[in-house]
Image (cartoon, rainbow, N blue to C red; front, side, top):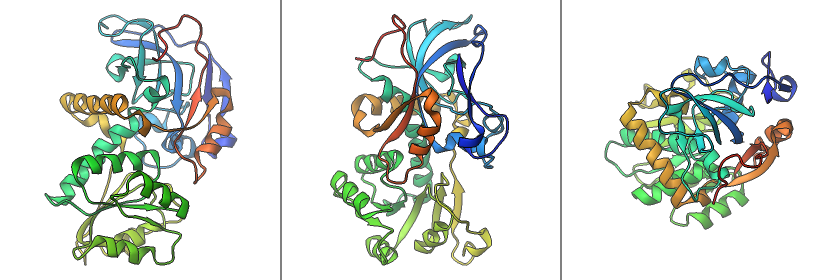
Length: 342
């Protein structure tokens, strides 16, 4: 089988290679063998490859990137009763999905409903589960208030999910994007929310104007880097910065932030810690993700598709600032292997 691997850390284009490896061993008790068909390219997939600190140890050690995707069950081990060969499943969190096949704990394989496409299924776990974690963190920080909440990278796939959830729950949201074109697009998609482009010289003043008398209580930030200084400056006293990504460049030292003087809180959210939630909570999160995939598949936009062998081009595309949607890595579906998406 094909698998994308690295034996040393460094720039993904330089250290990742496509290798031919034996197929995985037969699944053990409570496991299934899944032949992967579609996987997203999340920039977070590369933290172990590039040596970025912050990923849980088992993912940082993985030789093959990827933690999410969609495939077909090839075989099931003992004591697996809810999954059968030929069934489509979405998997997360499973290290090494950038392979043609992977052995998965049965509890981490979610059956894909009829009517949900293969591509939507490949995207329906990481971002919706991250959204659930972010929303809970924001609720705790807001302490009963309705905002306003400022989110960075609002035009990203996850940013649009956050905006859709804000509409549903009546949350006051301010969207922050990089470009004028991105701002126009978000205003068309979500006209009830103000959108500010950081390319404008007065973008900070615009955010303050939209924040109103009491200012911004919470920032949901996936950019980080040098932007952190500005974001904490836009928070109201006692506000909370929730960091869940590192898309930006530069750095901001913790000592430079007025955390004590203004009683600010900085906390992180990492979807790879999702397994620490109780089984009941995880079941609720998965049900939410399935509902989104079935009711609003347009929120799971695809930017481009590349064969697994073209992973270098896929990673480059995933890093383009102006892309819209998520880049996918695909494997051809063999004849007679499971049901196609409706």
